[in-house]
Amino acid sequence: MITSVLVANRGEIACRVFRTCRELGIRTVAVHSDADENALHARVADAAVRLPGVTPAETYLRGDLIVKAAMDAGADAVHPGYGFLSENAGFARAVLDAGMVWIGPPPAAIEAMASKTRAKQLMGIEPLGDGEVAEADLPVLVKAAAGGGGRGMRIVRRLADLDAELTAARAEAASAFGDGEVFVEPYVEGGRHVEVQILADTHGTVWALGTRDCSLQRRHQKVIEEAPAPGLPPALLDELHDMAVRAARAVSYVGAGTVEFLVADHPATGPKAHFLEMNTRLQVEHPVTEAVFGIDLVAEQVRVAEGHALEKEPPRARGHAVEARLYAEDPGRDWAPQTGRLHRLAVPGVRLDTGYTDGDHIGVHYDPMIAKVVVHAPTRAEALRRLAGALERAAVHGPVTNRDLLVRSLRHEEFTAGRMDTGFYDRHLPALTAPHADPHAPLAAALADAHAHAHDHARPRSRFGGWRNVPSQPQVKRYAMAGEEHEVHYRHTRQGLTADGVRVVHADARLVVLEVDGVRRKYEVARYGTKVYVNATELTALPRFPEPTDRQEPGSLLAPMPGTVVRVADGLAEGARVEAGQPLLWLEAMKMEHRISAPAAGTLTVLHAVPGQQVEVGTLLAVVQEEIS
Image (cartoon, rainbow, N blue to C red; front, side, top):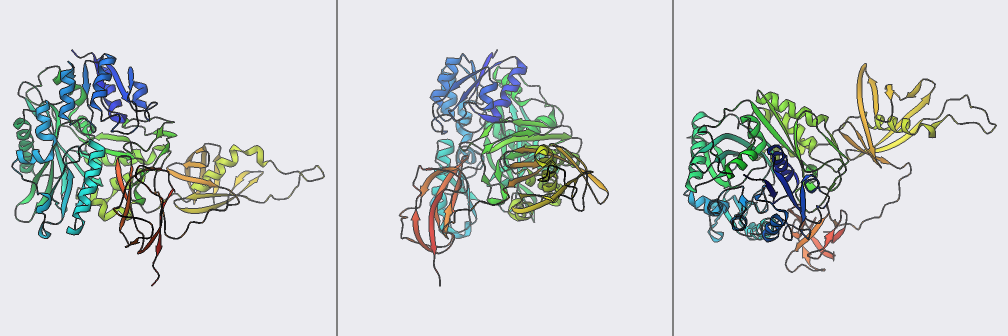
């Protein structure tokens, strides 16, 4: 029997595995980088071991350090989570060689399937070679052979871009997974990303636990997932299950894994499944399968690792489940990751899997996912409605997130009708990220602030010592909201606070009730320095007299996020002529590369960026002086 488990991972998945271990009576051990010293997963574990360093390469990708940590802490088993070393056969062998239980598939199965190129060959599919891509093959997808999560993936639509995208994908894959191998495959337009969860024991039983649809993706990384995948014909469902079980049996698979497909419509044959890969680990989206089948996949992983047999048939699926990934990122600014203090996170009435709690800091070194929000309901329509409503009412106070995008996506007619595909955000992102906020939010913020500082607003005395019996001038406050400035006017009267056109029913420091056109609306207010949150709307309190701002030289390229300069274009130097859209340098933030390109054709007059440089938001990287024709 397993008595103590080390989770070779961090954040949300470590916390999630710890939760099940506690329920099973198993002690828990965390590992943490220096950046994660005070992270939630390090705090909630029974024991924690430091991995010196900050970057994944120094810490969570160091299998030797993690095995030593497990031995030092007295763990008798290791759970890899997902990402990092979860699909590294060498790490699995090192755990087994140290005499511990590996809560995952056999190393040989990982080797056979963790490399996407070998997995495709096993399923009878040959990927394209780097030099075999012709114009007729476009578009193609450059893809990392190891790992997942959309890292090391690039769509190539022009043959001239292939070499640059191969270089970028290799660099990103090496940084994320410690393996820079990539391959090229045809890119299927308009397909749906559908996957099958499998669970296998050491006694020959393989369960196919239904399907999941993960088509809503940004940068090839999933955003919203659901189970079961809606609208698939019974014959296709049978084919998907059969292929998934066949893939598992082909490598004598043990434990939890996922077989992924791209399902595309063909005019002659109807929907057709294209094998993508097999992930030899637990998936981020596993909670929707757990909800539908009423099981704990982590508990099943532990039991399988202990040698227990599965029942001959899996439990029966019931209802529908949907999961949304809440990211610290700005979808309206090219998905730029965000950092800072997470003041409050509360999403009542749902399953919330997270690696953060109120007051934690979201840093630049790791994935920007804050939490997974999961609901289960009898029908798909009810599940979508419940999840959208829960997110809309959630308190998410801190860095900018994709919360509004999630709510709008869940209510979009294309998604509610089940007609989505992997190009959903390519088509709809501008509409889904258009600024929108309650127009009365600034007034609610001002009234709450006025109440909180009521002692500063006592009726003024005259210079003769008596009260002036004249109407006071309106109070004025200014806020930035959804990229625009708003000026609010209100008065203190004998009847209380008043504002033009709006009846103030109640106002205190945390709750404001306004009546507009006969309808009362409630506004919950929270403030952290200059940041004010009114229900789901974020505002910034502005000074009465704006401070003068530094003027930036035209053509200045500023860091859009905190991160590290990982590469500068070959041969780039001050004085060079550049073309509009030409890639100049690359930043890495939260495990993703972000390209900085020339805004116009001209001359590079300033280049401050150097590889390895740590930059903050707004750091001047380069200046391109535009050509004037």
